[in-house]
Length: 458
Ligand code: NAD
Image (cartoon, rainbow, N blue to C red; front, top):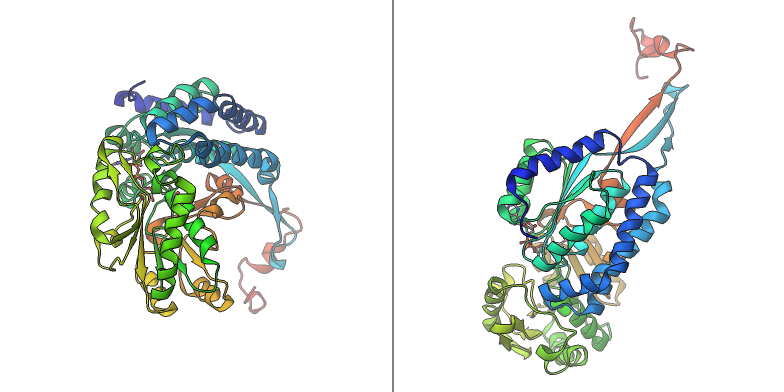
């Protein structure tokens, strides 16, 4: 397909704005039809999406279904089942001094939205926000990631043929195209990716006072203590970490534990890697690969930062890195300075719970924190003393499959949250509507001059 010509971008956005202004996207029937068509597209063309995700990331078809295609279908089903309720104005109570009157909150679409997506779940993260944008009655520009080119061009080919071109457009491109898009005025920008570009998006949005959602990343810790069955904990950690070859924003980035816990956990993590991916992960179709050479080089550079308990091998020609668990990693090691975003799991020793908590609290607020402890007092301390986009006990990653749990970061891991009803709210303005009859004329007696002592404090 090729990138969108930069000089076409202003016209594309203007076309969508015209359609929005004409009211094309407002009727519930239009929203339902677009969502249903998108659902049908995902189901009918599933094998093509699976192939594209395989080309871009070596993603197994089952994983593509579980984490991208099926996830989107479930989000659409939830939106279709809930849309009428979400759209319904909400009556609110009013203070006595305002009576008689009625008040309600009316959700209205914001206008034209821009969705900028990353490469790691290139289908799911491009379309999941779009579900919210459409449900809320917006026009939308989708900018898929150029670093997942097979998926990006499939989206660019299929979406315009399926959805209403008057209101939904795909712009293909890299930095120059995204930069051109960002000079346009949007009514919401929804960006998923790294914090450096998040800042670029925030600066561009400030020019037009455009509200933004930033879904960023960070180092999501996992803490394990001796109160849980370690075999099961190891298996869940391995699954959450090595899915998509570790390129998951909410993957456990590293594991904290005391010396004795880590000594018992390390071999169990090795066993779990063998159980899930076998002893030759490179030949295992269930295991993905690193997205590109730049990421591969960065990740291979971390392998010397600890002692491999399992893995440690790599193949440059295939962009393959074994699922690797590193023991004896120091807090100062490079692998502990930035988000790993690849199949390397460092084990970092702590003295005790206090040490683990202060380690996490002393760093940027992560997108998720995972705690494997059956001790209610330990759980309570993580809940009370740490801040993260999400906190999950006993299981990594899965919180994002619950439509009623907000998905988003805090601080360096982002701002704003979506999924389920929140996706609808992100792309809506909650308009306050007040109606007060002119008679009886209660205001003259209460708030209008001449001010008398009786009017004080009303
Ligand atoms: P990426 O390189 O694909 O970039 C994301 C988007 O930003 C792309 O569409 C790209 O074209 C655009 N972009 C890149 N440079 C730009 C620039 N200078 N100006 C304007 N636009 C630009 O993806 P990435 O950032 O490498 O993604 C990985 C990061 O995303 C990780 O930090 C990960 O944790 C985070 N992430 C977060 C979530 C979440 O839901 N919170 C999900 C997935 C990934």
